[in-house]
Length: 126
Image 1 (tube, helix red, strand yellow):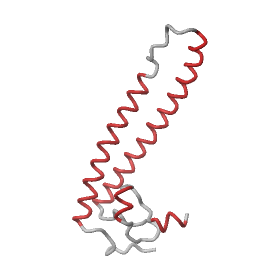
Image 2 (image 1 turned 90 degrees about the horizontal axis):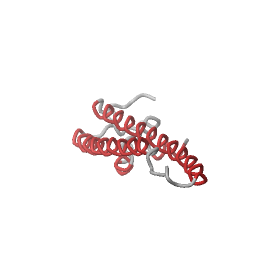
Image 3 (image 1 turned 180 degrees about the vertical axis):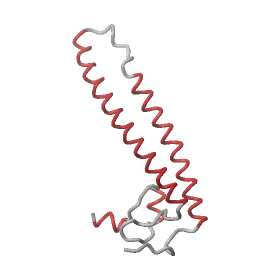
Image 4 (image 1 turned 45 degrees about the vertical axis):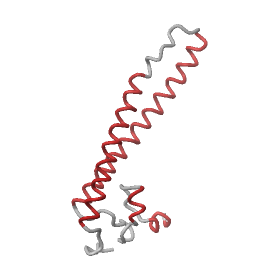
């Protein structure tokens, strides 16, 4: 499949998407900081004075909590990376073009999932 260079969003549309993505990156980085600080503060939840039975149970939930926080952080980092890659596609003027069909991805989809690289049509084919 050859890439049709005429199939693309206008510079005005791209600028609008760029602003949207930059806002999402700022928010996502803020959320990542919150996740990381929660992860750092996990071990300091004031259970030293409770009975040993609760302490053992609490250590188990602390491990679960650390694991889920870690998974959240990894997902958030991937989301930020995907958003930054979308900014690169905006610079290259290839943003919003489905990597399977070569058609434009619907604006509504891009507003909801600004880092999307597949149209709904292509997503349904998977």
